[in-house]
Image 1 (cartoon, rainbow, N blue to C red):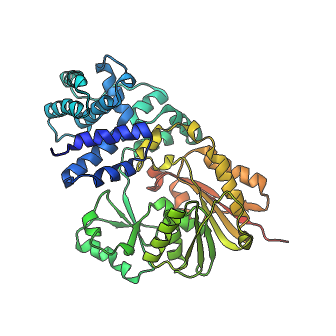
Image 2 (cartoon, helix red, strand yellow):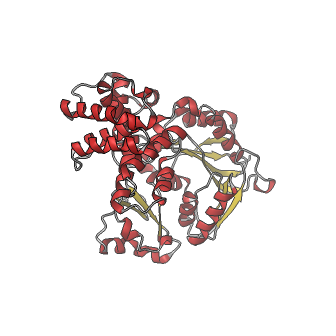
Image 3 (tube, rainbow, N blue to C red):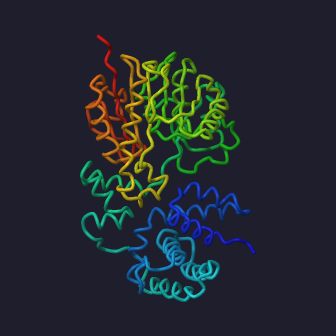
Length: 448
């Protein structure tokens, strides 16, 4: 029997909600099993990401038609209803009657035959009432939560830190797909041909106005054409990470440490900016990630990258103390700045990340020991969570008076936010066209 794409999507949704896995990993696993057609793979992808992106909104729309609270329904039944509502409200190519029929069939395929009639009744009630959006949403954070499908806990954190207008603009940006951003691998001279190859193939792209060697494509554009191009000519890297590397401002001949490097994109970009001259020590806690990083560096011709497996929270080897011109700490974080790419992150509560700031501070303190007098230390995250950003920076500066704030040399980012240059900045999708990201810079004072 041919596997059903909608049922596969519901299974993936159930796994994600039950196990808390990352959507992109679940999707990769799902698509690697079974001979899915391109159309079926596209439908699975659309339903998985679509329901995750709009889960709270879908639950809000469903609630008036369910006799039981949604959280009391069996998980597969709940996700069958969500997937059906997503098709009714967000997809216009599937006849509503077909959506209802297929939802009941999915219940049977998932071993929930007794729920098929219930699901059928709920969805038919939705159709009788008319598929329309609420004219009035609840007020305050509760209304934003159901409208943009983001828990109130995060909304109140962001409103407190960034203000109500910026918070709603950020929430609105989460409904737009993230662009595909490529970084040319300038260590391979032939990679300069990539823009011409894309133009000849009719693939739309723009050159980033401030970031050299950066191409921005519409989401999912040119995937088939890019597959025909040598893979070491380019790699995907959001502009936030590219600005992070620009802010570090590594120069040819520098000795650089990237203390939390995997999967290695920033190390590659730094190698390109350094023209392959100098030395980059790229570290990660896990040996298998270091192995993949080594393979990636070799494939991209980044001979200046050395990989080392180590825990960034522990003291650096004696030979590394005060030995680096520039040290980058792009630390593990809660990831709320990349919700567009990993929508499941929004459903994690701030309390789940309570222990992260201590780990981040410890990494920063240990990395500081590696910076030579007059050298640069940089801290970054892909989260919009003040305890992991500004508060870590302020605590570090209080503990290490031998480090002073360093103006970040990325003036266009400050201009876009209407701010004067400073030692720290938060990047936003709606202001900078990037993922949400935080960067802070320090300089180690020279010995007197």
